[in-house]
Amino acid sequence: MDEEQVLKELIDELDKLIEPKKIWLEWGTDIAISLIIKEGGKALKDFNIAIYNEFLQLAQEFVVANKAGMIDEAADLVGEIFKLIFLNKK
Image (cartoon, rainbow, N blue to C red; front, top):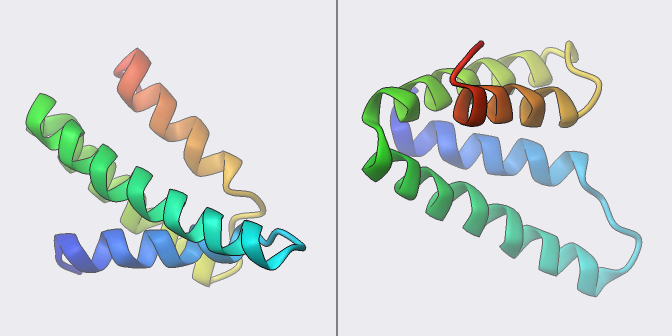
């Protein structure tokens, strides 16, 4: 997958995992997830390309594993991203 496809699929998979009951919340979370992934990814890329590349790899692994039903919660991904960015560890 190329960079844009990984980010798009990550946004789509996270959106499926977060399903608010109210329509206006669904619309709001769609926008928030998209902005966070796209703008956060851009900022991370500008900050450190090596960490950004690790983020892309992790995102791709998450998308593949989630589609295969191997991930129960988005928290798994979020935890790995926080460790990667803030602790610079895997």
